[in-house]
Amino acid sequence: RRLSGSAAGSAAGGGGLIECTMRPLDVTAGGAAAPRPAVSDLSPGQIVTGWVRDATDSCVWVCLSHRAKGRVPAAEASADPAVVSDLPSHFAFGQPVTARVLSVRPPADAGRDKPRLTLSFILNPAAAGTAAGPRGVEARPPPAEGTLVRRSEEH
Image 1 (cartoon, one colour):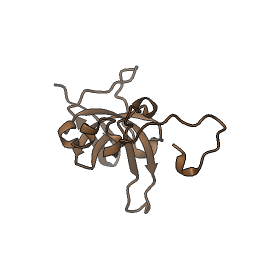
Image 2 (cartoon, rainbow, N blue to C red):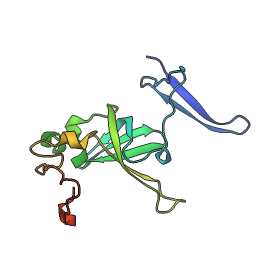
Image 3 (tube, rainbow, N blue to C red):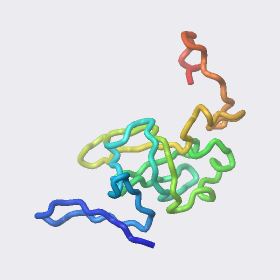
Image 4 (cartoon, one colour):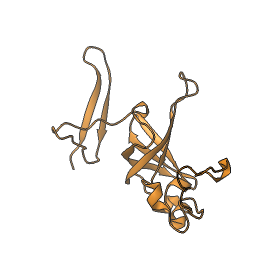
């Protein structure tokens, strides 16, 4: 295996950060290491890659970089109820994953809080709808364009 890393910080001041990993190097077309995102770089709908940090009964924690960690709620981990009911046995520490950004919430207190990142492993929710949709709810087609629906019926 090859150890790869990147350094950040000022040349004059020290105190820089060195990020090292044993994971395969992401390389851009020019041969340079692809930058890893910060939470502020992300937006809803974006597809990102990372690795599993932890899996609990209620969620999977995913690292996108040392600056961006997110949570995948159980209902967004899979359309398969067997996976949703036992996340720790289906997601292992260090496992590479691809996710869709659901929301990026800025910190409530910029001095103390970190931004909150919510992700989904269901990359295409429209295609994930089987007889029991991603949340175990029967999938329904969306209403026809221009149809007036009550708020409780919206998708």
